[in-house]
Length: 299
Length: 155
Image (cartoon, rainbow over all chains, first blue to last red; front, side, top):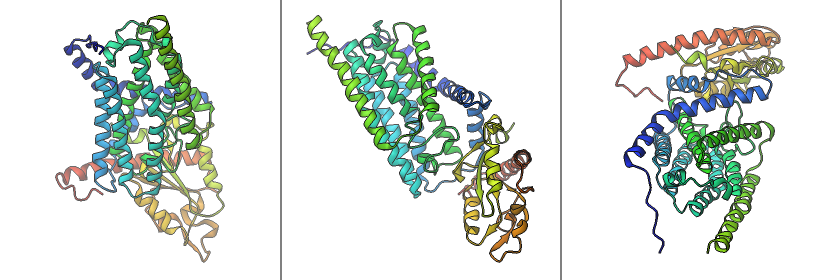
């Protein structure tokens, strides 16, 4: 029996980190979304909206009437927001990576349930596609956590971030796989099947079809929390040097915008296949090689 | 300060006729005019929309469709009738199957004449509509504070 390493972070610091995330993540996420829209516009030869446009959008949505088909929609949307915030808080508090992933997945399940609660066929198709996306990205996200465990011997985010090990050198395949899955998670083309950003449309508006006004605003805020959490995972790969990590986040996000603007949307079959193919090859092979080298080099 | 005028999301619907005005609406959304500078987004979903752009005269086939789209847009909302057919029925006014202008079916806030309406005048019409949209938002807010505690009317 291997003794599990205890998390090396002070509980007070982890609580403070979680609260800072809860308060600041929407602002950071909204800014990222604003910069995203601006860069996208420039890539398309347009001027683009102001950087603060996402905040104007959400502010406006809160001023609108809340049309609900069934009142359970309100509950599901609130659960989506709360569990997304909780997942991010657990992550930034240095909690267990697996627990973070479970809370993260659960929040998306609430979004799917919310879309299923309405009677619109467009909403239902969006919900089904969101489920397919969850099925597509989930293996790679779990492999990311497993890979980090194999390198640092811990599932705790605090231990992974403070390990001082250049994780990216051990897990290059997992990192590329994570970036591809990030495209699905950020709702970027070619994998923006269930719903999409900007002025793109997909089966009316996919999962968000039957949400209007304040409910749509809550979905948007949950998505901002998601942005910060997902980019936080990118940080973990480069945790040994915060400056390099920040640079990696900027480069990774720019790549996502570039992919969004250069590749057209694919069918759900190809989404599922490519995500699993990536998880199966880059992810599993990377972990296999790591396992083998560990056995050979340090038995 | 209101966010309403900073992020108007538009839905457009062509209620029959030659489609020319509808093409001009789309022209206003291209990079040449780049309406996203003002936060204007073309949405295909009435439940996300604030501004309803209708082109063409309404006929008996899509009378219900126009009404349905209008009803699905959450308050506050404004309707802009784009092109002469939408404002009055235009040359199709006397046709047996044409109801006339859009205002025969739903309340219209701004009329943008022209055949076809130029993108500049459509943008001008939408900007005029934003003022009305903000006035409606304020009216809604006042009404809400009057009916505080009475949530029965929200659906």
